[in-house]
Length: 108
Image (cartoon, rainbow, N blue to C red; front, side, top):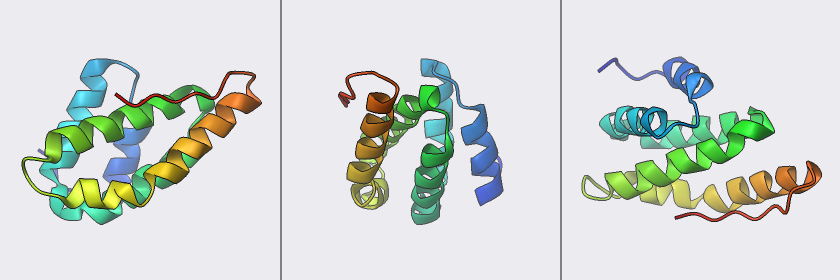
């Protein structure tokens, strides 16, 4: 796997698609670089806020996959995402309401 840098993560997030394979592939890469959990979550949060409305929910799917699949390896992502998930979900819901949607967010 390639080495971690914030610019590499930004590029991967820009290429993230709504497919399960895309989410899982990036999730594995992120978990592999878990020693960089804090900057990863910071970049994820920043890029989520910059993403088009149609892509924001995919960022939440990615966070969910990372949190669920990294639990066995350590608490880094659970701890770091805890600090930004409420804001991220509120942001996505408010943008959905602005688009005329219901703004409901369900995390599985």
